[in-house]
Image 1 (cartoon, rainbow, N blue to C red):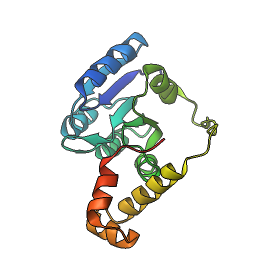
Image 2 (image 1 turned 180 degrees about the vertical axis):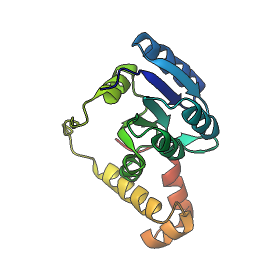
Image 3 (image 1 turned 90 degrees about the vertical axis):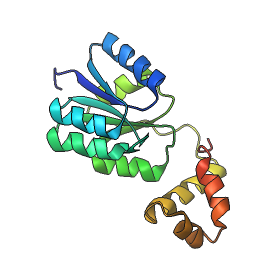
Image 4 (image 1 turned 30 degrees about the vertical axis):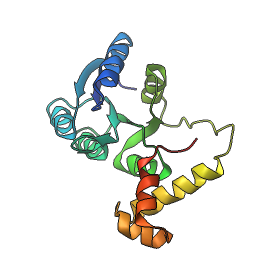
Length: 176
């Protein structure tokens, strides 16, 4: 485990970003914060962090680009993806890009700290409850959406549903 506690937080939600930065500083991290993909990539390249917390959806793009940039300059960096739009397809994409964990918002600082410091071999405990039928349906739609490169028309055609119906489903948060 590295003794370097440099942490990059990339999130466009300013109150969350600032609150998480303060909480992580209290835990001993040297925090730098960014509010966009461009700023996150620039900070990662200028001062490669040992740890990072990156939001998936940012105002100027996808947080996966920041994860890839961090991994390009520092292979041993531990990156946690944080998002309010969690689904299996984006979790898989985050892990493929180099994230070590994927946490849904709202995640508290203790959860983030645990995920950042977890041993590489540590596996999360299985859930106590299986996914609801609504959640399974939502996950399937998200997976097909990702397979269609986030093309709504193509996804709707493959799922045999109206495009506007699909747009309404995609605009909602995931069911529990």
